[in-house]
Length: 88
Image 1: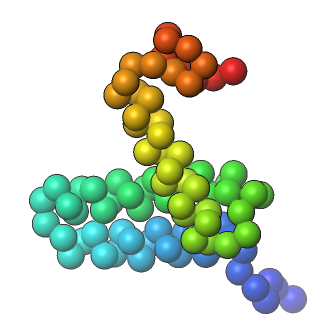
Image 2: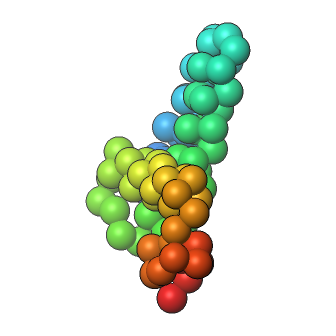
């Protein structure tokens, strides 16, 4: 018998797919931003699957990780030091 409930990862991908469809109705930069946001939501779905209780939490985690990565890249400084390297 198959799975009778959806996982956080499946729900997260469903949210991202809805965001992608919504972005198609936008024009210009907002459309590109919506598509990026949907991609960011999927980016860390595997990791979020283990640590988050629901799809909203998993999507938020994934998007905020990408926002933080962008801020670190833009500042030229890594979390661990001034060399831009964020790996431990």
